[in-house]
Image 1 (cartoon, rainbow, N blue to C red):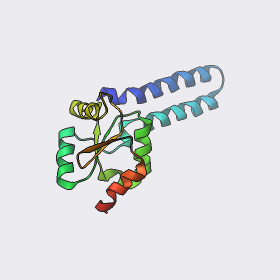
Image 2: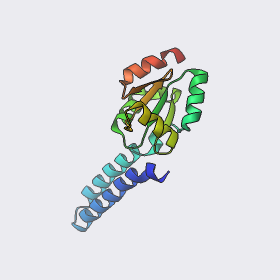
Image 3: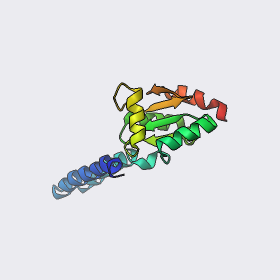
Image 4: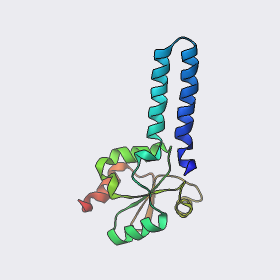
Length: 145
């Protein structure tokens, strides 16, 4: 759990340090703007932006039952963010697995990507696709309404 929040906390800490320096330098408006930018970056990179993650084994079980894709992701991944935002409301139709919280999920990603933890890895009908185009993922979801 802590690993997922490391990057967001680092953003807030850096923003606070830079903002504090600007306040002591007599530039409070710039400090507020900088802190706001860092807090926004922290929010975007936090686990709060993504739907609730499930364990890898549970996601695979659900996927085999309903046929929906499984997405392996991790906080801070810009490609995961791109996929998440480009899917819009349909994001909740996927089964999301945070590989930083799930060792089996991380192992599945490594098995699909020659030992690398490359995300997002989307598994459709048991076949992994590394960093697929969001439009392609939307097409895979078309049969689910």
